[in-house]
Image 1: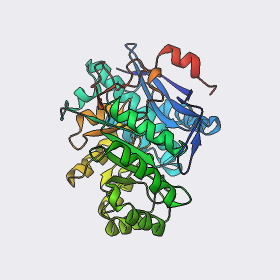
Image 2: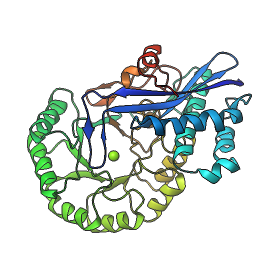
Image 3: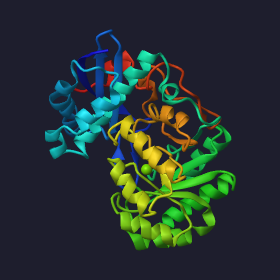
Image 4: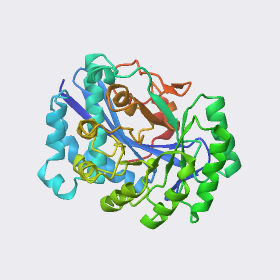
Length: 371
Ligand SMILES: [Mg+2]
């Protein structure tokens, strides 16, 4: 199947409330920035990365796809996913300016679209193409109840509803306030409400420094935290290793890392326990697999970060033997021909051929922004 066209797109999709905040970001929309590839048999492959819906920077990503990657793709065999990933990722002039940031986000979109084409051509969902389902149940953990911008009474109500009405067994709460006592109080109130059987992870989004994290962990000892995610600045390997040595609370990270090399450095330093690759930042499915295998070889769990809001990651999670749970944030699901679906706290397996990235015409009409 020869690639005949490369068409980038930018969608800005409003969240399910006016805005949300964590310790480092406040957003009102999610950016779905990507590409549609068409094969000479008419098959269409979709791929995208996730952004904060900032049009100027989103245009850098689509410009990279349109002006740099398109000419490397047109006329190529779409099924050569590995060869084409290498052709784009190692293209000398782009490697010179890239290997992280814009070029890697753009590469992620292209690579996902190539895998989407490949799975559609094989007429199977991606997880089936990769090797089938390796566990009976894929747990969904709910992040959407736990934003830092949610007042504590609503945080408790939302957590209870997620557990008692929707059937979640796993929650994640954002932390990173100016005073750690505020965060400890919020977590304690949720813990008291949901009881000991529900797992509670926390996520600092890189806000605090090492002494603040150590003080927080010491005072959180009785709250049974499942993991502490991005406690420190994203690239601080030595700091995360030091924190990991000083607390029994497991460390989770990876959503801000752009390459397998970056993950290997954290893995080698013993600085991470729950490995959180994001296919939309890592340059796509090809590099994601390298990271998941590196973690698996060390017998560490892989729990993807959902920059795609789970659409593609659900396939990778169903398939990969190191993954038994996946984050849940239901912001953009209505944009897709086969939206993610969670029942009683577990993800359902996608059934349609492809990688789960195919947009509806409605979504494109409603949310597209000018390139
Ligand atoms: Mg996070």
